Length: 96
Ligand SMILES: [Zn+2]
Image 1 (tube, rainbow, N blue to C red):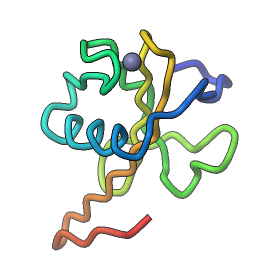
Image 2: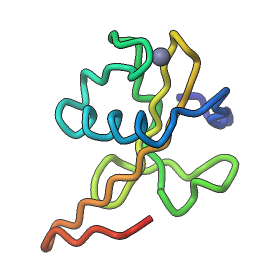
Image 3: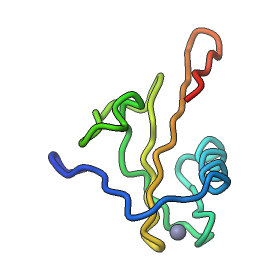
Image 4: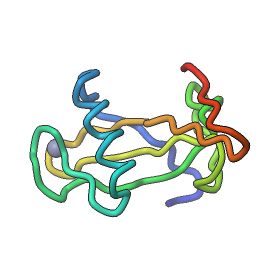
């Protein structure tokens, strides 16, 4: 969580792997396995404003409401930004 270091993914997971990561995160944010490495090598790097994902650096936010979580696997050095829209008033989810 450095101040001026942005998140620079060295690679990306596939869409299916990204979905697996999303489901794993939703199930247990403290234990997200890497779809490739399959062990506890994934770190939750940061929480950012999903509308700022195209920016460098993205805007950091608290993990509540509409946010995206940045996950990084130390084993295969891949990162993913997972958008989680959690509207407190009625389950509205925005399509990305
Ligand atoms: Zn991995």
